[in-house]
Image (cartoon, protein in one colour):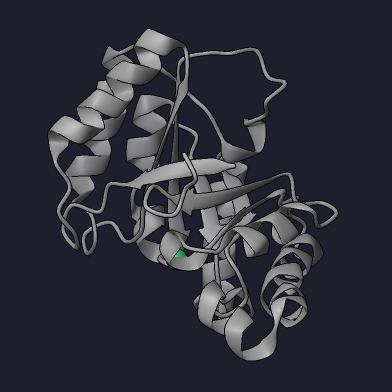
Length: 210
Ligand SMILES: [Zn+2]
């Protein structure tokens, strides 16, 4: 289970001190800091992405993709930075920033069925750059309300499994799942984690059990 801190400094209150502390902790404890954001230029300043990557370098952190995170992995100090949803064009604009830092990041895609050919080409380019492509549901609905209305099985069959299948059909190898809004009840996230092919789930700090 991955517990991630949002670094969307335009759409929410993010304190640089908290980011600094997360990266310092990772360096000190030989751990991987998990940070995520959404739309560069809208939810997070593009400069903040650059600054986070610079700070990670200053702390000597390795850039780790989410598909590389495993309880069996050799502990190492790292930063696993992720971007969620569907801002393929804005993400593409950061390619040079990622490359300048040698950074490898993770993209959690939602509504992939609605992507244009251009958006799919941008994702293909980001994947070719060495970034990871992971699943973030079919329609970005709230897990808790969907489960309440339709049941847990329907959530898995409607929102979770097809979000992996569509990415696999496009040639990617997703093994991680991020819950929209970072939230899910324990019964739900345990059920997702039990699905074949799902090796890790990501929640936001507020919903994480630890
Ligand atoms: Zn999302």
